[in-house]
Image (cartoon, rainbow over all chains, first blue to last red; front, side, top):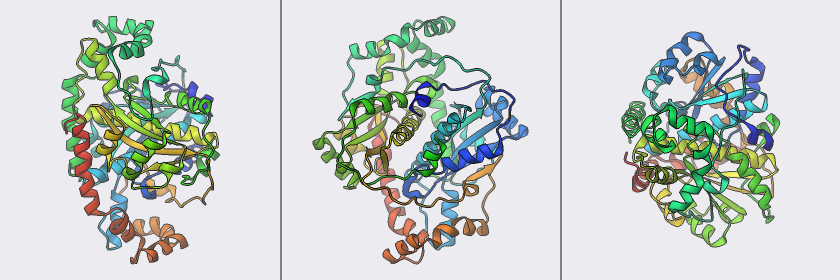
Length: 247
Length: 247
C-alpha cells in the first residue's frame, strides 16, 4: 500500500479500455467511507462517461485531451443541496448559504476525491486531477445541471494507463514538514529546497522552451500568472455566490 | 486495499503507544507523492507531538479529547509562503494574494491530508479529522507561528486505536452519485435516501438526547446551526484575509 502511494504518477494518457461497472461501483463504495464533517456527506460525485457530455466539458477544461480520452470523468462537488432539502422536509433550516457551509462541503468533496483516486490506483487504473475546475466552475455547473448549493471543486479523469511516465520530482520531505510549529524559511533554506528541482534537465529544458530565465518565472509568468489568478478569483467567487453561498 | 478503505472508521480514542519516527517518515514520504496543482506543492504539514503545543491547540479545537490523547496531531496548511519566497528570490512575482491562489493551495493541502490518513490506516493507525480548523484558523495560525500566505485547513489526530467503534452508517451510494449530469432530488427521493439513517437506533437516541423532533433538527439546530455557521464564516474569511489572501 505504502509502495503504491510512493510509486504513483498522474496518468495523462489512457487506453480505450472501458472501466468495468462492477469495479467502478467497488471503488465508489469504498470511497464513500471517507470521513466527512459530522458524517453529513456534503458532496456529490458526477460520473461522466457520455461522449456528448464530455464534449461539453472539454473546453471548460481548456481542451486538455484527458477529458475526451479517459473513459470516465468524475466531477466532485461540494453539495449542500441534498442535505438542505432533507432539513426543509424535516422542518429544520440547514442555514447553509454562507462561506463556512461552502468550505465544509468543499472539504468533504476533496477528501472524497482523493480516496477515489487512491482506490482507483490500487486497482491498476491511472488518474489525473484537472486543475481547471475552480476556474470555470460556473460553466461546469451549467453543463452538469448543478442546482443551488452545489459547486464543482475537483475533476478527475480515470482509465487504464496507455503509458506510465517517469515520476516527477518532489521537494524533499523536510521542505514541507514542520516540527510542532511552523519554522519559516530563510533565503538559504529556499534556495536549497528548490535546488534539485531547478537543476533537473527536464526543468531546465522547460525554462528554455518558455524563454524564461528560471523555473520560478515559468510558473509565475507563464503558467500561473497574477493576471490569470486575479481573473479566476473573481470568476470563482461569482461561481460560489451564484450557487447560493454568500461570501 | 479496497477492503481497508471500506472497513475503516474514524478513531477517537488512542493508546499511549507513540508512533515510531521511521514509520511516520515512511507515511509522510508516501504522502508527498499526492497530486498537487502544477506540482507546486502548495502545502505544509505541521506535525505536533509536544505536549505544550498540543495544550495550546486543544481549546482551539473546542477541547476535543483527541488532541491531547493522540500522540501526533497534524495540521495541514495551504502554503504559498514557501513558493512565493522562491519566486521573489528568482525575480518573479507569485501573484498569490488572491482567492484562487488560496483555493489552489487549500486543495493541495486537503488532498495531501487524505493521502496521509489512508497511508496511516494501512499501517494499523487510527485517524480522526477535527472539524474545527476553519472555525478557529486565525488563532491556530498564531499558535503554530504560521506566516503570511499560510492558512490551516485541516487537522488530523493519529495514533494506535484504543478501541475500534462500530462503523457509522453512510447514505446509499446512489444517493451521492449522479450519472453524466446531476439529477436533482424530489421529496420522495430525499425521504428514501435518509430513511435508513433516520431509523437507526443510535440516531433515534441521538434525537431524544437532544430533545428534538428528528435527526435533521439535531444537525441544523444543535450541531451546525445557522448562527454558528454565519459567525464562523466571518471568522474564517478574516483568517484567510489576515494571512494575506484577498477575497
